[in-house]
Length: 101
Image (tube, rainbow, N blue to C red):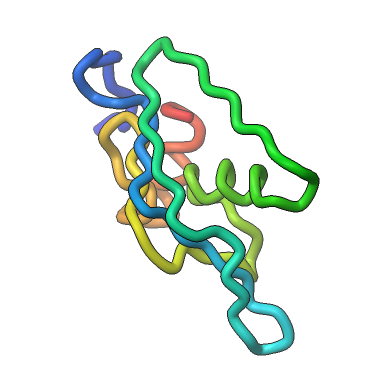
């Protein structure tokens, strides 16, 4: 079964709801994103701007389940083309990255 889906204009290309992410540093969890919510429709462009170190890259990597080993989503939900990447097995996640992202 392919994870690749035809573009459905009623399903957001990306949807983050109250996303929170953290990194484990020296045995402690450090929250770095709090309450990020956005919806991007298919074909829409979105610009995320901010100062260096404010979490832009962390938000992007969290959206596609590609955080570094010490990073994790600690709250909220992520959906890419209607799929929750955090619900996928490692094998399906690799396929999702290849075919959908």
